[in-house]
Length: 489
Ligand code: FAD
Ligand code: 2HG
Ligand code: ZN
Image (cartoon, rainbow, N blue to C red; front, side, top):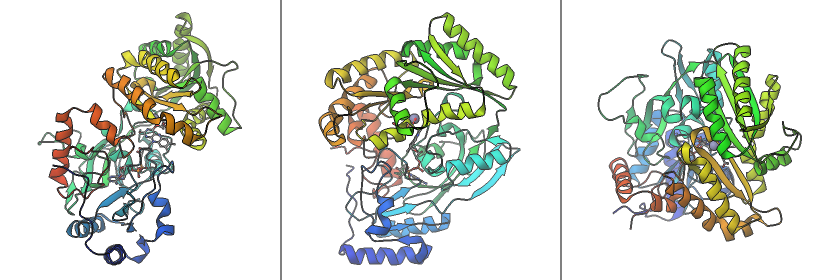
């Protein structure tokens, strides 16, 4: 029967820590180990400062061989290991619990781009390369690495893989699972698995690399990956569009696909409270549209053709949307600066909530055909519970994925609002998404935040299979224990 427990070191915490520290220093060098509360603070606290744990040692290897030795030592000594990339996860998955027994393995020093193959259109990188550095390395070879998320300056390829990150270009390019061709990972006992071959076709049995994608650090430490590169788009057309309703937004997406086909790269929904919050937070930006509207979408088209032709397609979409009374108003970016301003508004919504505090994060997806009904039903449920909640609803409408994040009323503290409403509101929203054949975590993963909830939404067969995979790879339950997989009792 799976349990949460890992075998705690038999010795006292201090002597255990001293032994662990000495062992880690022998593997990676003293300069690549941190211990003590002050030095480890930023590693054991999550991005939103909601989860705070403790680590015996923070260890920062720079090679796969060092990771392998760290894992072998921890395995032999029954020490749990928590892998950490850029620590931008919103679910608390990258920080240890407060027992102080874990080694936190930070991938930040494994930050080399190993190769860019412009004939195979692939890039091989160490896991600690930031998403921004990976995109820049691709750009330098006139290629696109297509994952695009707001945390790109800090999040790392290993973390992107471990969470199967999504973001604002999934509609066109897919999520991280679609963008990877090979993975190198160190298993909990130190063995190294590698499929760093860059093959687009390989039917030689189970596709093992995909096991590590979305595994949230529970099966192995991802140390390197081969990523797919795309042609760099030459043209780009962006519009900030007011729509009648979420249903009109879905219909406008249909129109956009009809006229733009593959060029439709992003289709992001933004509710009025989301826009108001971000404008207040940024301070130096105004809405692209003169009047207030309840619902807006940010549309981006990209192609290998000309700006003129792409802008003409965008205008066709908007005109058809106006004719069908889906579109109320639109601002079309006339320059790169305009497009960047529109995108900044969209990308900063998450941090605006983090700074305000008191946000109930529901990262749900439902079939596109049900998303408008879902938004209507879930909004009605939430507002019946707390009429003053600010309905920050936004995100990847084109993927059937919205960040449905009711925010505290201005006159209530975060603690007060979350204390009263976190559980009832998230349960109500997740239950509705589940009833629509949806998911309670479309792209952020489970971590600790949603771990207990998972039990309600996965079938017993799914949960048992997940635990069987976990036991096969990590029989001692030492790798990121008590994350993602709910206890089965
Ligand atoms: P971490 O936070 O360090 O870790 C996340 C999980 O992966 C943890 O369970 C950790 O143990 C594990 N892990 C990390 N590295 C490894 C490794 N090398 N091997 C094995 N396990 C590992 N997410 C989206 O999907 N779409 C978005 O649009 C998006 N936008 C965001 C915007 C902002 C402003 C912020 C703060 C976050 C956003 N995120 C988004 C969430 C987050 O950035 C992603 O989940 C990202 O992929 C996490 O990468 P990371 O390197 O920070 O991982
Ligand atoms: C986004 O799309 C991210 O901006 C973050 O996935 C979502 O903070 C959030 O809820
Ligand atoms: Zn998102």
